[in-house]
Image 1 (spheres, one colour):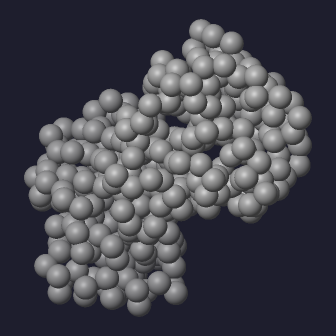
Image 2 (image 1 turned 135 degrees about the vertical axis):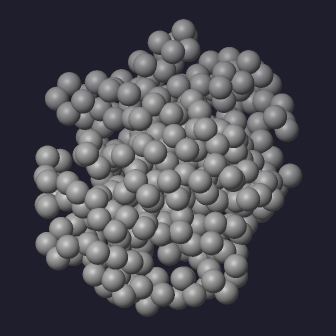
Length: 397
């Protein structure tokens, strides 16, 4: 996939109406519907400010939650418009619909330096279906399109890909950074290049492991997915997570790594629990001696040492997926140690979105990482080397 794309720095927006797709899919309080964390709104501010300063009239759009094409009061973007207005220190005009009379009238009257927000894109069923008529109607309000919602670029939706059929499409500052940092890591990484993969399922990471076997010097496998690999090597894993239909795949990957000269590191010891509970009995055992009725819930101290050494010798590290059940304090040790090793490595450190990003933030290491991706699914597909529809549609440099 070509990810050398034109960004908002490559064009003038003075006097232009710009349709800007952002990711304002913020968490809301279930009772009050108040925004509980405005990080995603803040993340879009540099692009918004840049475009306003450049003299654009800005029509911002986003989805929120999963309304599945129905208008739902609790998923309106009205509270987001209010919060954005507070953060920018200026009025954010809010449209009560997406491509209806209110939106069209407000977009038509919008002046350079002004900003408006459309209602939740997913209130219209055609957004997720990439309905051509819906994409065309969105595009008719603007002269140019800017994509700054990296979290949704792996989806071919009307607002992430469809509109680019009708408008010149540019990357916003967030998307530009994601593409340049992750693109360099995959194309031309400073070596040694170490990939740290965790999380529960092998099936989620099949494409990533496959792609990285051609690029990385070392691949570290932890988290729940490691037990399928341990079982594939002929060891018992007690009641640990197992994807029995992926055993052959795990054996194949072990063989492929050996053939390509890639170091594949698996846990040598495991913190096991008597059951899946935060306060269960915990002990550390060798990974090839997990007792029958115990389950692996984290990597053990020797594994932490092994993984940390590999990370500290790296020049580029990509991390996607926790090393254990980090939501349980007793089993957050491995994930915390890996985050600390990344923070102290001096390498270019890239954390895939989703659980790894949450873990890094929760454990207080966020400011020590080179880059934390804003998209979980998108960063995974990027690491797989897949074409991302919301990136492919942007103008090439």
